[in-house]
Image (cartoon, rainbow, N blue to C red; front, side, top):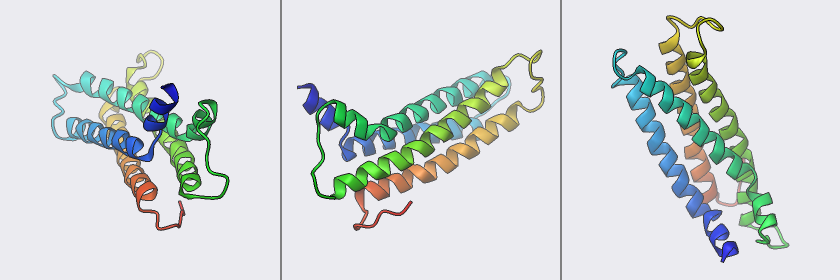
Length: 160
């Protein structure tokens, strides 16, 4: 039962679904930061949103990066010959590393705002840090679209 649930969760379609949910969250975070941000009301919400989004992207990257190990631990084996599944494993690892990096950077920008001013005086730079987090998120979105395209429409060629 656990093996079946894990194989469903680690299937490329399930990963694409999670990728889509993260894309929606990223759109919401960017919209909240750039279009609906009122410094008097929503600034701390935006900081919390970016911190949470960074953690989600980081976690998704770890799942992708370690997909092969998870499959091995759960006894879900790959075919002996090279197959599309081997290529999907390779793509998951490659893009997982990038998602981990972008998640950490986005979360770091949120923490730069949360650090007390006695340690790091960020007064006046708060919106700059939020905008940098949004810009890194846009780069991450580009990679998420490429990841989706790569695991579904690879045409036998996998180049990062």
